[in-house]
Image (cartoon, rainbow, N blue to C red; front, side, top):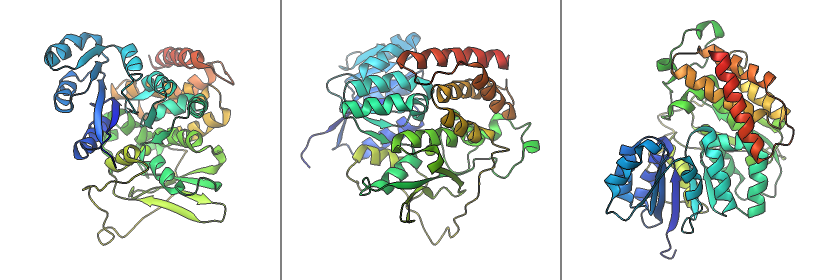
Length: 386
Ligand code: MG
């Protein structure tokens, strides 16, 4: 390898994926230069990261924090911008090769579209982008010749199973799910769970939104939609299996009946690093899986009567059009309300279904439709909750 360094932008550098991506980069300094870091509200950490990684530019999403960031970085030859529009436009900088989208929720859509339009490679951690606008995004990426490399552990696993197989047809994708903290519980046991219960994930250490989504199985539902677009399969070819140990990160079955699985300890740095090192693999010192210590791998069917969000996501995928965008927006509002103790755990799917019924259907949404329907859904979801 020559000494060219991959120039990277990390959108959402202070979150769980962003900080782990910077861990990967810290261990592989010869391969990367950090061009851009962005954060929404965590100005303190953004400043610390900027002083360590010396990006060309940083953006703080919250305008009110601009002075704090700008003052701290003055004299360091780092451009400082503020606001969400700046996050979306900074990805177009000439010097960037790869954009890692590690922000949470719908906010990832606009910068991801701008990055693809500018011909940047995308390491996609923001699954909501593909949930909301999967058809639009994958068509645009194909048109621009842009690779979308999955960071989500399940989709990284599927992608790794596909290496050397891209000319072979997938018969079935088997998406594994840990089942979250409430696996095995029934509806009557979940009426009074609190945010503290729901935020205790057994295997993965993640941000609050995705942890709640894991507890309701909406995360798996969103991942089914993400897989449909990343791998071009029909929803009927995607099966979810509960695998509590989170050692098999997902599987692909081919037409001859052969199943390939990708395994490893649950450590997000592995899929993050692979998305950045692809097509190569780099040596790491991450923990290794021991077959001597953990001898059981279990599998069970998901309980969609208790965890209705998974069934809702499949229904949204079947209906297509704007519906996945609607369930995403409704879910974001519902999860936020749950985190503020304004909505019960079992009421989250109620809010989402009510929004599905009320938002007008659009069969082939265009760019503006996503923003309109997202906005409309949020208003209605808030009305339902209050
Ligand atoms: Mg995942």
